[in-house]
Length: 309
View 1 (cartoon, one colour):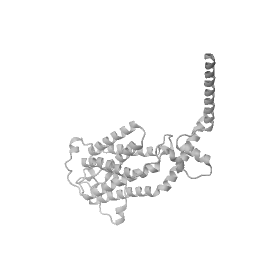
View 2 (tube, helix red, strand yellow):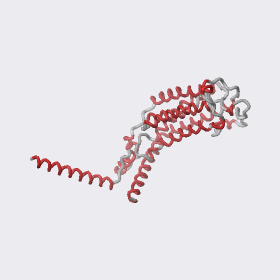
View 3 (cartoon, helix red, strand yellow):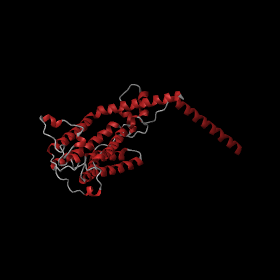
View 4 (cartoon, helix red, strand yellow):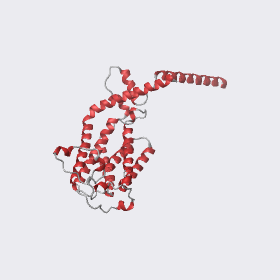
């Protein structure tokens, strides 16, 4: 038993090493796209912080969703953030599942290049909209009388380019359209296309709907912010996805592996990456069992023919 467990651990470790080698080579090849995507996230953070400086609090606008959904209140504002965190972490962990599990359909680096392209496209439109018109924020810290409704002017211009993580929860002015819904819908649509579990896909879309309602009930966005996000993000993702080349099949893993003089090592890594790896001892045992089964079946067939004769 201990020998079998040790063999399984060794096999899993070889799978992780082979996957890491391939992903590193893909990262070296596509580092410009990853860097551009991360830079786009930073610029979006800078833009969201910048609009907070010019935000002016005012009366909360009339909103249909506010009439239909009961207000959760300050003490329950964490509910929508908890749901968003679950969506974010679940998708993040799923993109790294090829390092652990045998059922592999995606490459982690390539899927994140695609996701970052979707996010940058949506966030560019978002920046244009919330800088075009600044609406009074409906969130509690953005209303009249709150000292957080407007940021004090910085003493140096470089302070405009400092992104504070706290601003993701306590920003004001960056309303149309919801950034939380951008991430949620991009993640759900990506799993819809590249995921394999139908039940999880259905749960993901249901969670996105619940997230939309919770954002409105928490008064973090107006209903228009959520509605615009639903059709804008889907249209942008559909357009960008149609322009990008399709992800390569996992069966082409051998083409992505670094060149090695040992062809057997390359072939073994190819099997590991596609979940077809097997221990040599296990393979010998299987061949012996299969050979014995074929021999027995041939004997039975011969006896049956002789009896009939």
